[in-house]
Image 1 (tube, rainbow, N blue to C red):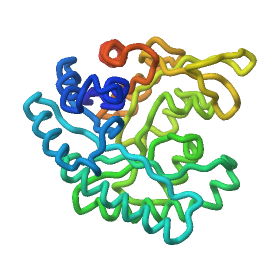
Image 2 (image 1 turned 90 degrees about the horizontal axis):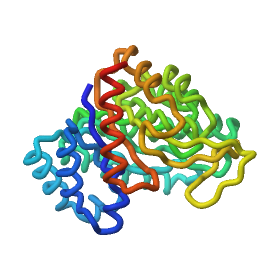
Image 3 (image 1 turned 120 degrees about the vertical axis):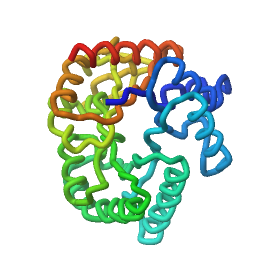
Image 4 (image 1 turned 45 degrees about the horizontal axis):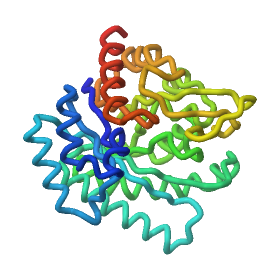
Length: 285
């Protein structure tokens, strides 16, 4: 296992102009992380391709690996022309992943206001075809593409399983985010146990959880069932992180794990504390 940090964890500082992506990589390495996951929040590699070489150079100088490239995408509700355009755009993102030298790339697959299983099953074959096209394009680069349990529509463990199995490509897996299952009111430990065998990448994220009977304001968002969630420093929230990491470890998973922080605290503090917690919890698992 290689423990690292997603650059998404430092989005707060990136958006505020307090750090550049190179600063973020230096910071991640300073914490003792073995890898950095590149998530273009607060910077763009499509608009600023010169950053690709700058990122690679900084990672090399900092003695840290680049593990994964994670981007957004949506193949739901598109006409044929829009669908093909989105596939083409994602292939260009694969080119960026190859230029970065990473062997893993996460892309979203679908977003919809209709979250019903009926809608999902209707769209599933078309969504799978898009993922097949991208995985096939990525294969000659030695890149494994993946879908994250993310965005409500494809966030339940069984929907992720259904997509991965229908795509049926050895280089298409799932980026398993242990916290995101709470967004669809699924027990993280049970969901991780369901999907860990399909994981090419693991994200460790934590949330505070409050029932729908309580009223909450700024900083909170709702799960699909109306419960309230707020991003937490990993280890400070309501997910049983040590239990979930034990499931991951006992599964035999031995690849990259990334810390993700999206709480209200200072991002540098939240990232550092979460990274230290996971390092201890993994060693004790």
